[in-house]
Image 1: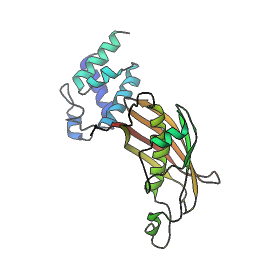
Image 2: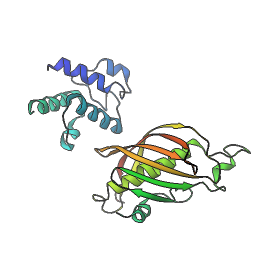
Image 3: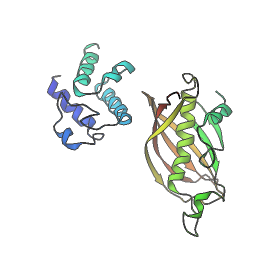
Image 4: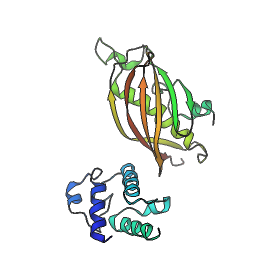
Length: 84
Length: 148
């Protein structure tokens, strides 16, 4: 799966939780879930659970703490998918 | 963890404690009850001359029983010194029937998930005849109070 496809899938996942629609429209590798999209910590949990479901992976506490932006989310998803 | 020890750990007191007792609890679900005394303060104003229990108070009852009691049970092992409580993060409730002063309600809650410190529950409240009063989904996150 290439990076553009992953970003497109993440964009759909975060859509219901993103408070800043303009930042959501322009989502890219450098987008921060909290600072840019204004997703709160409770909804960030739902983003991560949706990522688990979409990619059929399990994200542990340590990985969760790093999943604060698109770039690290992609790295974590790719690592989990590669390890299967 | 016993029901009494959960009730003792509830971070509420009068006039904002809306749990009289729990009937059963395990790691997936909880049932509890509360009776609305006729002299509760909010009945004086909701509504003028026509007291009905406010929906936000029904939501609070559901949250205290369904979210906080279950949360206390689920975090019993890691909780050390009572420095933990739940912050409400979302409610999505539907209201079917009014609850009048003096009525007893029962709340049944079922865990949807408890992950990364967030507890999400499906809650259903019914009156003494077993009719559904309100239901919905409530979520909260663990808050660790800083030591003073």
